[in-house]
Image (cartoon, rainbow, N blue to C red; front, side, top):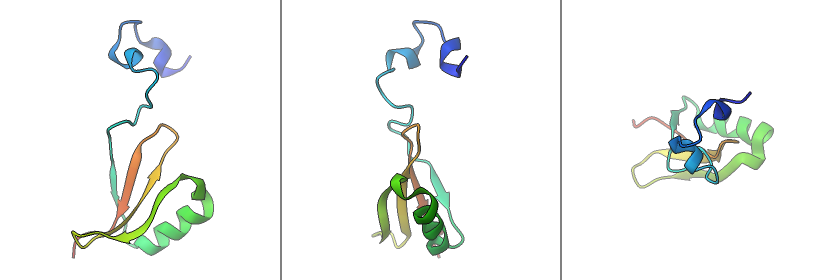
Amino acid sequence: MTSDQVLSSDHYFNSRANLRKGTGVEPVIFADDIYESYAQMKEYYSDEIESELKMQLWEMIDFHVIDPDGYYIRITTRRV
């Protein structure tokens, strides 16, 4: 039994069954070494990389991945 199967038929999540669970959510992970993190993602999970390394206007370097549930995850540097 999956966690979705324990929900009642009128539960909010069941009404959004055609949407991925991560829709509208962007978790942020701060990496101590963004270049090493990116290299590891590129090596093991290259299909999940949504955007390449980029210096943002707010002076942080990041890239994005999408996990199997659809979460759009930003992996970024800390502000210095």
